[in-house]
Image 1 (cartoon, rainbow, N blue to C red):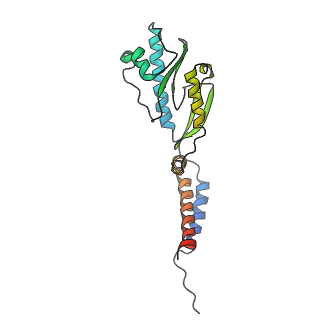
Image 2 (cartoon, rainbow, N blue to C red; image 1 turned 90 degrees about the vertical axis):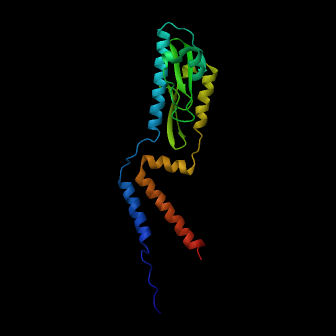
Image 3 (cartoon, one colour; image 1 turned 180 degrees about the vertical axis):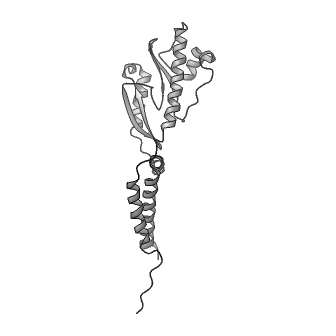
Length: 198
């Protein structure tokens, strides 16, 4: 009885999978934080808004709301004199608000990234990005700001989708992500071929 010849590459796939996996462990992570540029753009907007408001106060103006949206503060107080170009939000969820206890204690914050500086941080996943938002507890007596802090806590419970997870890990370490996805696809192919194929 003749033995059937093995197909070319038989046993090669598992060997390649192990080799690639070992290579992934040997290569250090070369990726960067995927949300870095978004956070950088958002913090630049907050810096510009804080500086414009400080200049507004320095010019002798004393009318600032305790809390309000950017558009309302822009219309009522700052206008084009202090903000010649309106800030462009880096994400759909970035929206800017002013919180003010008095003329010495005010800050602009982003609905997603929080303040530039604060005494408390929340780290969470925002789709395929990781965000570290900052709040300042001195403003928690202002009801609208407390609601913002509570909303940031809700983001901490966000569960990213599979594709968002893959994008997040790919941006941080492309090689190991490709290896893991490749191994997963080989496993699915193996199961399909041995269980479902005729």
